[in-house]
Structures are given as C-alpha cells and as structure tokens.
Image 1 (cartoon, helix red, strand yellow):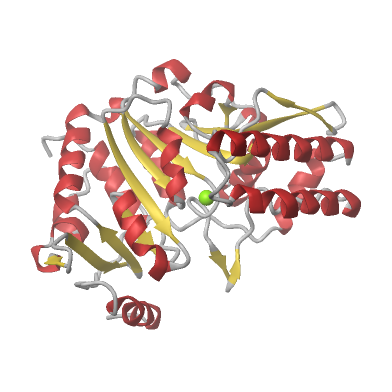
Image 2: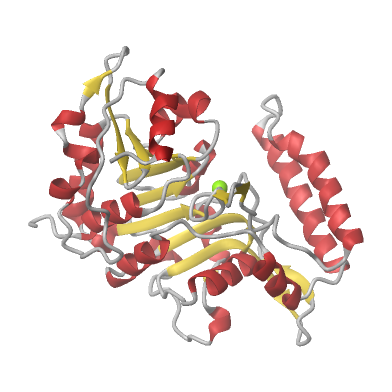
Length: 362
Ligand SMILES: [Mg+2]
C-alpha cells in the first residue's frame, strides 16, 4: 500500500512525531464533484483511528493521502472553521494564494523548480549578472532577523525598485518573458487546475499574491494551464510594454515580500488581460473585501500576512512544508490549520475547497 517514497518519509518522521498513518486505496478522481462528502471520504480530518496525543497532549493527525503527508494541529478547531464557512456559503468566501512553491512544485525532476522571478532571462547577460549582484547584497538583509521590520521594508522596496530599473534599462521584451517561461523548470502542483475550476464554478475569487512579476505569472498560467479563469486575479508587480513589446515602466506601487497582502489589491488587474477576454473578476476590490471568510494557501509562515488588510471572520490556513521538514514541522503545525509536507499535490486542498463550497445542509 505504501509507496517507497511514503515509506522513506514515514521513517523520517516516525522518530519525532506521534503519528498514525493510513493510506487510501482509491485516489481522488481528476474531477471532484461539488457535493463531495468530505467526512466520508477524507479520513484526514475525521478518522478517529488517526487521532493520538503527542507528548504535549495535543491532538495530532498525521496521515498519508495520495502519497502526500498531512498534519492537522487542532482538528476540532479546523472542523468548527469548516462548519462556519459552509454556513456562510461560497458568496462570503475568497481564496488567497501565494504563487511560488505554493501553487507550483518545489522539486522538479530532482532539482529545485524555478521561481517566477528566478526563471527570467533578460536576454542580456550583463543585466542578468547585475540583478544577481543585487540578490547577493539584499537577500542576506531580507532574512536577517536583527533588522527592524520598517527598516527592512525600506530595503526591500529599494531592492525591488533597483531590479525593476535594471529590467527596463537592460531592454526586457515581452518576447523574452515568453521564451524564459518556455525554457523554465516550473510546473503547477497536480490538482491546481481542478481547484481553480471548482472555485470558478462556485464564483469564488482566487487572489494570487506575489512579490514577483504579474506578467510572468500570467505567462506561466497561460503556458502551463492552457486556459484562463475568470475568478483568478494576480496581485503582483505589473509591467507596461510599448507597441514593440519593450518594457517601459511598472504600474502602481511596488509589491515586495513585506507588503504582498490585501492592502495591495487595488492595483491588480485580471489575469487574462492579454487573452482578449473582456470580463475580469466579477468582484471589484471593494466587494472582495466583503468576502470575510478566507482559505489561505502559502509555503512560508510569513505568507499568513497575505490576509492583512482584510477584516476576516474565519480563516483556514493551509501551509506547504516543502523542505527542512524536521526542523520546521512544529512551527508550521502551530502556524497553519493544515500542513501538507514533502511537496504534496493539491488534491487535499481540492477536497477542502469542495467541502467549503458545498451547502451546509449536505
Ligand atoms: Mg512561496
């Protein structure tokens, strides 16, 4: 029943977690019906056989699901949040997702997948090198815990603006973005398309927050998913190109790692601007803010800040713990309602979203 991969993971975690494992003989179908019965099919949350108490007396569930491992720190709290969101209905729900290593895979063919920013080859080695030098200088500052947050925010803004200036100065074209994406090592987690489709059917907006570049993310969506979604909106830095496809400027306020949150929504445009679809997200930014229940997806604890600026009622947070599993396990379990480990597919989130969008009477 266990795959080799699952067994390796099992032995890795067995030493430090009080765990209970189960496997599912029937993998989730590619198309998940809206009336999916979460309780019956997904023992992640409800299987009493999976509940044990660890040394701290906390309830913990840890299961294998479709080859993915899941941690739920407080199943009762999670269940009450699910019930509350279902009661309010899909019209009150919005999904907030980080892009890199959350919607996309962390590992691809044994190598780190590209980030939306990292994949960009400007077509000008001199400027690629200049941007790398900026990274070498600013990244250590980004992760330095001794720098106060307000000071760090200024440094991040400085880094982003210098990088953007280099992209303009170095003559970036839209064609270079298209070819960079085509050559890149980037792929969505399995189930992302189905998740977007399910949420589109339920008219639930998906806001993808990124400190990267909206135009690159849109190109990745276009090349890898081959379709657009009217409910998906990118909240990121947006470029302006001239008639010849040369980058000439950036729109709006710079979005960096420390301000990618609901405050930044107003400058975002619909994902399919370039695909000729006249109708964007049905909700404008003010109506999105009326959706006070949130399903948040991220791969860093800092991603929880994406809901800053929204006065939400109920938030279910899902974390993807892709690396440093052993050292980060406790902090992720405490920070997120649900944690998927080892670069898991999106199927568990598809089930959760299906449950949240189904009628409370089901
Ligand atoms: Mg990320």
